[in-house]
Amino acid sequence: MKKAILKKGKEIAIGRKHPWIFSGALESIDPCTTGDLVQVYDYKNNWLACGHVGDGSIAIRILSFTQQEIDAQFWVNRIQNCKDLRNKLSLGMNFPTNAYRLVHGEGDLLPG
Image (cartoon, rainbow, N blue to C red; front, side):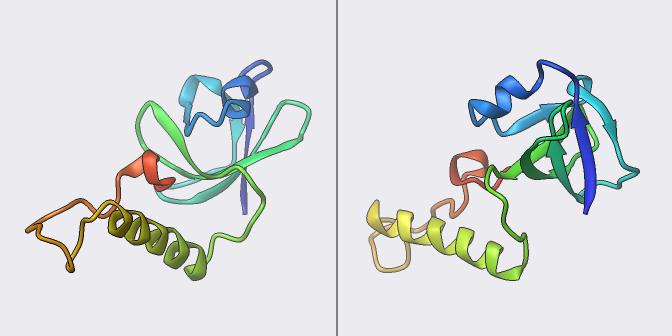
């Protein structure tokens, strides 16, 4: 997987679980295209997170702060978590609503 390295001091936001890395925080990043997955490291080469590359000032949107494979099952689990939460909130097909948002981006750990 591709690698991104943060500038010294820019790892603090990741430690607070902030889901975005801005382009100015990057020391370096492997050649990428929008949507590519990258492993994020601090300036000492310590692993911090995994995310996907964006094409704006938000360079990386964090998908996980724990080392895990981002595969089809990862996405199934995240979306199922969204569905389960909406059901707990009395939203969905079995409740008297005619529409609801299944995924709320960063709030559901699915940024971008």
